[in-house]
Length: 365
Image 1 (tube, rainbow, N blue to C red):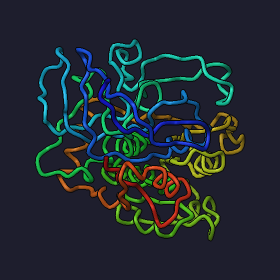
Image 2 (cartoon, rainbow, N blue to C red):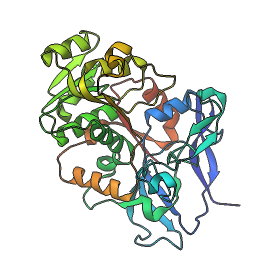
Image 3 (cartoon, rainbow, N blue to C red):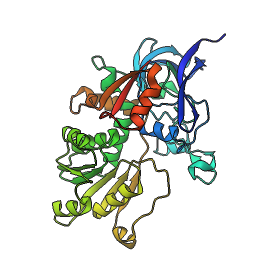
């Protein structure tokens, strides 16, 4: 009998449950990681709800912090027992897209069910954990192309301090990078969930001097102040677009970051932009998007729309952990709850329904 482990698997829309699965075999380019901490992402909730299709029985999750249990024979530069993380996006770096400057992309499409509205295909990119292969909400995870994807955790950093690096921090910072922020810019960030909060922190690090954070939750807006927001707007209390135009003297913002994935936030972000400004889109969308003609200026506004997938790879992870170690940003405050892996169904219920001030949950096998 193969050795077994506990894992959270997708059963059907509305059901993610614990199951026993065999511990994966290790190929020459792989590494088996014993998970010490992982977490639940908003994308996992899309999977839970059936809004993003994955195979039944797949282990979900894509944010690993752990210890190398076993190394493949071809993996160099690491050792068993070493504390590591791997990016949520773990491409093989051999695809045409990766070789052409988009390292988070494998450049491939797979046949998809009609549920995702993808006309028979969905872009898989380099997102494999919890999408194409078994993910991280388990006692063990197999990391493919380990030499390019594993990053050692610096001494002195806790699991909770680096838990945001594999996805949330990398994605949020990429949103800020994609907003083409320059020193002295005014930037607005729509939605202050974990990714939006990281985008706010990234905008400050890049030199924005007026950062406007938008959300409907005052507790999250208070956290955004800690992340670097200068102005907070609760969309339940003010007309955000009108308020932004007042704050900018009618000019609009230099960059707008959309971190939720809805038509309403996408459109509002567009309406806040100055001519020549950049909209950085981070949301995972469930339906087609429409660009508002007036805000778009009928195509005459010199606007840019940049989309992003979480950058992965060991160099990206090294840089992010350097930021954490430098204490220029403290993302440990985003970990608001801790659950055992055995209680992950309850953790999903809490996270999906956004109760008790939850931001991120540390899941401990």
